[in-house]
Image (cartoon, rainbow, N blue to C red):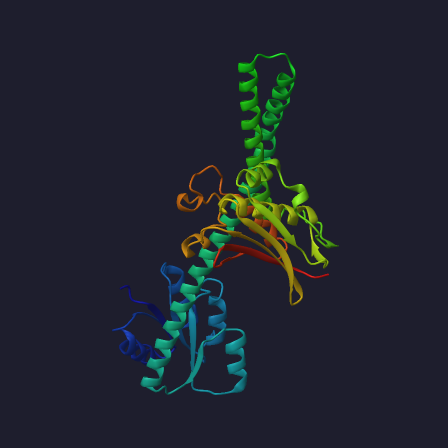
Amino acid sequence: MTKHTILCVDDEIDNVDALERLFRKQFTVLKATSGKEALDILAKNPGPVSLIITDQRMPEMTGVEFLEKTLNSHPDTVRILLTGYTDLESVIMAVNKGQIFRYLTKPWDPVDLGNTVERAVEHYNLGQELKKKNADLAKALDELKSLDVAKSNFMILINHELKTPLTSILSFSSLLAESNLNDEDKLMVNRISKSADKLKNLVDDVLLVVRAETNQLKIEKQSVAFNQFDEGLGKDVTDLINKKQQRLTSKLEPLNVQADVRLIKQVVQRLIHNAAKFGDEASEIQLESLRSGNCLRFLVSNKGPQLPASVISKITKPFYIDEDVMHHSSGTGLGLTICQSILKSHQSQLQFKNTDQGVMVFFELPLG
């Protein structure tokens, strides 16, 4: 382990030698008999100096004046002032101008001085560790800023470079579908349109998540009472519910909440889709809201398999797909991530609870 370097300064050579004998086993000791000589030693010494011990009363330059001159060149160095005088003015100057760690009077007690030096070196080590951690934090902050820029650039790229050709594909496939085609051509055009629609939905979902995570999602809150959510269900959701012979029942309190209507409807409709997807055949999907303190709690529950704790901790993360839960990998794993991102912008979050019959998902919005 590299020894710490300390600098001892006193116009009395015997005092400097005494300090060297006291600390040479623990530290590398540099010596000077004047402030000017000490400054020359610091200028010639490229390595860090952990501690300076200096006398106050010296000719040409006082200890405080010397310490003040070292602040720019050695800002991290810890400073101890020794003096045979205990006038208050010297103490004040030492603290304010020299930024000393400790003030000791002569003749010093070797044990007290040794303990003080050990604490001073510990103080130096802590300062260096803090400096390194601050540098690491600054680096991490720069990386986060770069990541935010990358996310913004990614949004621009997706908006222009992907959505523009997608729009063309959807437009021309629509025109083709209206033309005179044989059955085989119609089938191919239909598959092109479905694939393009699926890709467009994926692009829109990714953009929504990125906007929410970069605080660019536009929120238009208003006071609103949600009376129903099933009127905007997509055809794929209603087809799934009908195919599995499920029933969707609603019991909603007519209480106003502060929310973005469009976004909260999207959250609930996605939760209904999930409930239908993983619910049992011919089962009931329950949608309800009830007052919870100063909030209104929205709940969606289904009858079906419960969620393992390991899945609950991951299920809202982007692109999470679990074969044991989903039974197949037809989704992108973004549905619940989008719900969580939207709710985060409303200072809320999804919560999951296993029930005796299946799974309940809920969130809360403030009344108003």
